[in-house]
Image (cartoon, rainbow, N blue to C red; front, side, top):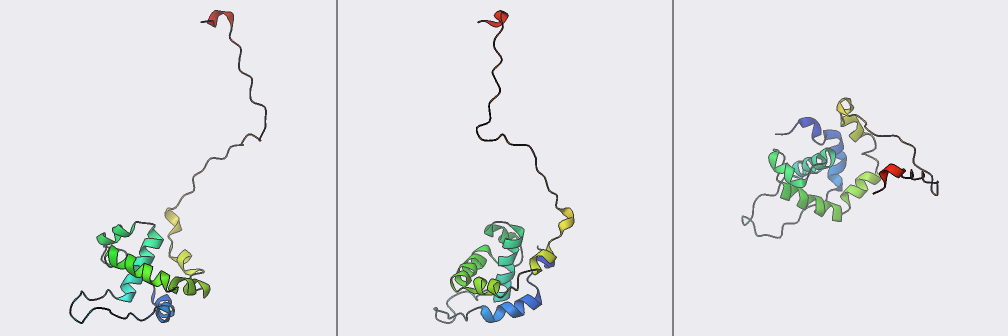
Length: 132
C-alpha cells in the first residue's frame, strides 16, 4: 500500500496528458491483458523517481506492476515525453513541495586535506632498545 502524497497531482497530470502519444495496439482484440491506465503508470514512474527505490518495489504497492511501469517508462522516454515535460518547466518547483524535509538530516565530515606535494611527517627513528 502506498501513500497518496506520492501520486502525480491532478494539475500536473492535465499538463502531462497531451504529451503522451496514443497507444496503437498490435494485438487482436481479446488476446492480451488490458493495458494499465496511463495515469497509474505515471504515478508508478514518479513513485520510483521520488522514492529512489528499485522498479521491483512497485510490486508491493497498489499502483501497478513493476514490469508495466518500467515498460511504459521506456516507451515514453523513447517518445520524448519526459524531455518535453521538463522543457516546459512544469517540474521546476512541484517535486520540492512534496518532499517532507522534516525527517532529513545532513551528515558529513569536514577535515583539511593535505596539499599536493606537502611534506610527509618524518618517521620516528628506532631507539636502541627496540632493535630486533
